[in-house]
Length: 314
Image (cartoon, rainbow, N blue to C red; front, side, top):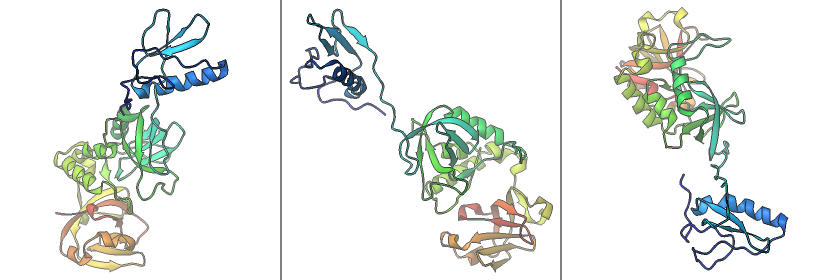
């Protein structure tokens, strides 16, 4: 962000000098404690006024004076650059520094706060209770190269926290790059929409389609190619999947409405999200690709979908 310029063409005097820019800054004498308090404020606000240098000189009476112009015998003082405002992650306002990139979709801030990037999911990296997934290290390394150690701006959505206490946010760099969108466009992440967090959904979906067309990142990997529903076995019912089949029937559960793909798969849509979808009857007889996580808890493999962007006509 550029520093605002003063109306006086960069004058940095504390007090009124009548708008004259070629006179030294000569504030009245202050007792020493007040003088140094004034100097501290001066060094802070001078950059905001457009001045690049401040000099201190002492008159014959031993009184210190300050000026923005070089003067014989004057000492050049170091300026304090104004810092970006700190973030209030409850509102998504301000700037924060990234201490560490944990994986492709989670970062840790200087204050220890964890931030989960909204609207996307990246493959897992190896951990104590999970195996590494193809593309996981690449997403983490890409994200680390973009923002590790840097200040970023956080923008939250309808929900500022997830059930694990992590801040949910879109992340922007100083040059305006939308990191969430860039991850998806590079093919390092898939879209993952959880209503009511719907900011940038259309842009993210378009970026995903572009990455898929270009076979970028995970879209060119064998592990992430679509799989016919007919080949789905219960032993396969784990992890994120791309499953293709024809909708043969509708179903109705207590908390969800379902699309049945024969006897092999049921796509489940939470009832509170149905308003985002067209009439489910419009899917009957359609060949669809469903994207999401398979659940083993149902009698047959079930895939939960919360947004129509996860159902693609094929």
